[in-house]
Amino acid sequence: MPTYRDEVVVLRTHKLGEADRIVTMLSRRHGKLRAVAKGVRRTSSRLGARLEPFMVADVQLYQGRSLDIVQQAESLGTYGADIAVHYDRYTSASAMVEAADRLNEAEATPQQYLLLVGGLRALSTGEHASRSILDSYLLRAMALSGWAPALDECARCGAPGPHDSFVAQLGGMVCRECAPTGAARVDPATVALLQSLMAGEWDAVAAAPRGATSAASGLVAAYTQWHLERGIRSLEHVETAP
Image (cartoon, rainbow, N blue to C red; front, side):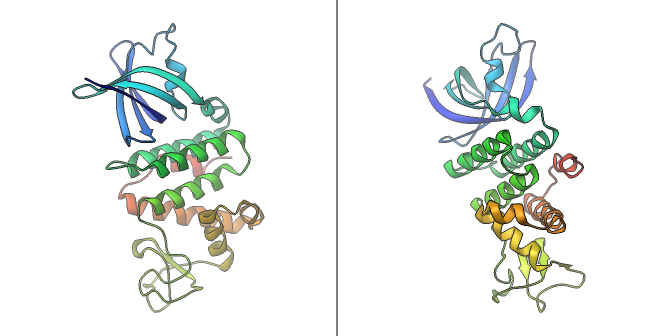
C-alpha cells in the first residue's frame, strides 16, 4: 500500500485504545483526512504535540484499508500554544475548525485549507479581534463552498442595494418587496462591516461601531448555521467570551 505526504491542519482528535488517537485533518491536496496516530498519547512520543488541534504540520501517511496511519509529522505552524492560552482565541479557533470539519464533509479545496491556516495564524498573533477573525473566516469559507451571502444586491430578485433586511434562509440581504414579515432590519454600518469582513479590509473592521460588530456576528452565525443545517456548538462559548 502506498505512502503519501501532505500539509494538514489538525481539526480534532479522539482517543483510540490505550495510547493511540484518531486525528481528523484538513489537508492541502487530499481534502479531509482521518488517520490513526499510533502511540501519540505516550509521554515519549514525538508526534503527540505536533498532532494537536490548531497545529499545522507536514505529515507522511500510510494508506490503510479503513483509516490511514500517520508515520511522520513535522511542524509547520505551532499556533495551538498561542491560541490555547487566550480564551477568546481558543473559542474562536474551536468554532473555525468545527465549521471547517462540517464544510468539508464532501470535497475540500486547497483554498479552504489556506483560508483556515491564515485564520489560525491571525488568531495566534492577536493582530485583530478574535471574533472578527472568526466572522471573516466563516463568511469566506461559506463563499468558497458556494454559499456567499448577498450583500450588495437582493438575494431573491437581484435588485441592486443598499437594502436593510437580512434573511439567512433567502441568502443574505433582501429588498423590502422580498423581505418576509418580521425580517431582521440591518443598519448601514452593519452591512458595511459585513462587506469589510468578506473583503478582509481590517482597518474598516477595526473602526466599526461596537453595535455593528455585535450585530454582524449574530448575522454571520445565523447564516452559517442555517446553511450547515445544524448548529456549531463552539459558537455558544464564543458569544460569551470576555
